[in-house]
Image (cartoon, rainbow, N blue to C red; front, side):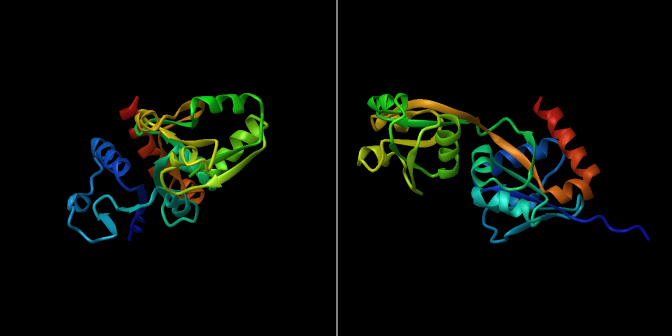
Amino acid sequence: MKEEMRYLTFALGKGRLAEKTLELLESIGISCEEMKDKSSRKLIFVNEELRLRFFLSKGPDVPTYVEYGAADIGVVGSDIIREEGRRVYEVLDLGFGKCRMCVCGPAQAGELLQHHEMIRVASKYPNTAKDYFYNKKHQTVDIIKLNGSVELGPIVRLSDVIVDIVETGSTLRENGLCVLEEICPISARMIVNQVSMQMEAERIRRLIGKLREKIS
């Protein structure tokens, strides 16, 4: 008797990212009807026919689920992949969720960035901030981790600048801040567990190929 195909499990970052990912998967014939029921209290959604499972999680947890094999495949922003530094394969730029990781602050703080002064940097992304200032700019900084509205940092004088994601820049402008330096572009990426990539190489490569065709 033929051995039954194992489930491939997807971890998707909650919110717009998951919605866009599901749209993209539907365009290549992969759907999960269970996920469309907004009233459902389920945590794991299954497509029995294709032997696929899906679950939603907070963005920063997606690389953790993938590294430890709780999910074979994850979709999350490259900002989180960079910040978390998990051992996963980044296989595809999905081309949506585009924004930029930037150093922002009041215009006059630009001077502090030019002269390599000791400054305070507030961010939800302390590892990214540290890597940028220490390894790219060779500037010693005091990094303060915040979880909420980092724009408050310079306004209440907690920090000189912030490192954060910028989409339109309207929140910055409304609060008298601006982009001072760009660190890197951000977009949604597909990541794969390292063992799954070997064990399920054919299925995963076929999926990546279909998605790549659709995106290009």
